[in-house]
Image (cartoon, rainbow, N blue to C red; front, top):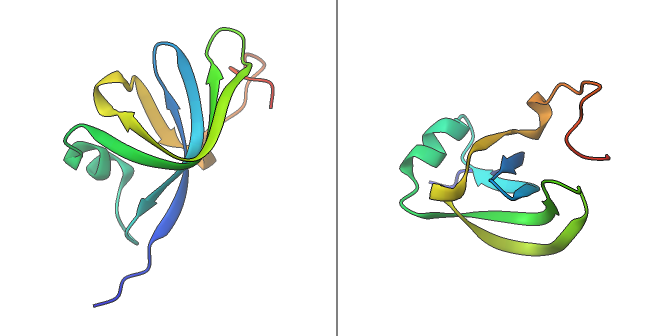
Amino acid sequence: MNEEITHTAVVVLTRNYHISGCIDLLPGSRLTDYIGAVKSFFAVTDAVVRDIQSGKVVFAGKFMDVNRENVEIILPAGEITRTSESFCDE
């Protein structure tokens, strides 16, 4: 059975970093279920890592693993509602 992978744009916040990139989900999968099933690390592709305080890009890469235990907030990028108090200069 060949299921297509869905590239889901996400924002991940840790104590020190704002990470934006994509994770791969099966169609119909929920981000919550995916993260709940991860044992320790999950892959983020096309990642951009910013310092949470300054907003400056620390590094970017095609692939990185993120330690699940360090994640404070993760959400689909499309679910973000911008306010006057944005957390980065995008």
